[in-house]
Image (cartoon, rainbow, N blue to C red; front, side):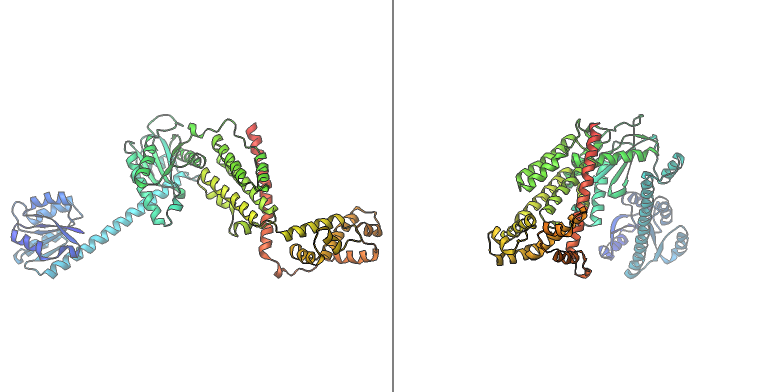
Length: 561
């Protein structure tokens, strides 16, 4: 809504202008009226009108003098002169003074509307250009400040000071402190970028209020969605932990009025513009400790809150105990053991890297358990399960503890639901009997069935379903593998090998062994891709677990020394 000031010494004409149009319908409002130039200047100072409708002939100060004063004091106010025919020469003179337009008396409503709408459009265009220019200047400024935080910044102190002055910023002290502010769980709270920007803007405004007693500070959007606060340090010493009252007040106000929490990491005081990056890196390191210390707090680099415990040691046998409880299917003890591990991390304030190593080791224990029970990992956790990427997105030790407990619970529920059936136990028993008695030349289906207490027909069907081959084929399979082992030892006759594996006819053994050595051509199109993916993932998990065990051992040795 654009504001209009009416200036005319005749009250009847002022009333006519006030009632001539539905001003609001056209996007205008009458903000004030004046009967001469002196009153008009007083009203202009109070209301800052966008447009002034000014009569030329008035007492005390005429319209031309008023136009000069308005152009000097309020250059964004557009002046439209209203004049009679005999004053036309004055109107032409007024145009040279910067009058936007003039209207000759008498005039129609349409003429007035067209004049005002033209000015309205010009004002909107000017406002948009001003806004765009301001936004561009802000972007350039933020780009420079982000560059100042980066490792490739190379301008000298004098050049940096000059650039700061170009952006309207002036610092007197050569010592600075940087704070990094994160909105806790911002990505999960708001999906839209516009929403995140809105709440960051709100945090920035409250931060300005919280730091109102601080003489010189600069707030801008930093890397990775954080809010950066650059403060001119009032002390003279370098590497001091700064005053935190303003940031603590900020946390309180955000929680009270915006109903969410933030975490603030604060670096120590550092000398010169080159020291800004050092303080920034310290603030980032302090902020990372929210993973263990928790959200909704101010964490200062070099403060007592970041001191590690006196015995920052993680016993490597804990994972072995955990695996035993998993094998025993004891859910309560598994959860208690996990809680004990994460309580150890909290109490000893282990570093973020060490905490990640421990967490990934726990994941590997869980995956190893699922694998050793004979189940594909993706069947238990889904094909889109990538734990080593997902854990990096968790924001705190408490969230991580809950996530890992859920992982173990899911593994126990899955393996409990898919425990071996009676038929699989029968097939497994028959398989184990064959592996022990393959050397018996009388070994037959009936004899094996008798040992597992079922009839031969049922064993034949069950074994084929569970093992994937017939009983006879499996007997031959085991015998050929054992023969291959014996041949590898050397200096053993084929007849002796045949006898040891339960084949009395060396000739039959020779033919069977040749068939065994022929590697069949595999049609790659028939490979079960899902199973192949599972096998590959199991291999990777096994390798990862091995690496993590070595890392844990290394960390333990470092801590001990």
